[in-house]
Length: 72
Image (cartoon, rainbow, N blue to C red):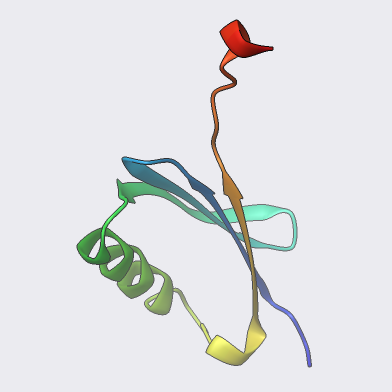
C-alpha cells in the first residue's frame, strides 16, 4: 500500500483542526465544528483534493486537553 496523504486531526470538545499533508507539504488546513456536519464538510474538502484516493491515506487523531493543574 502506498501512502500519499497524511491527515492529522486535533480534537477538542468544540472543534476539529484538520491538516492534510502530501509528504511535508500542507495541502489543506481547516477547522470545523466537532459535529457530524463539521466532519462531513472536512471530508468533502479532502475528497476534492487532486488525485485523492481513500486507499492512500493515513489518519492520526490527537485530543487537545487542558491540564487541570489545581488537582496535581
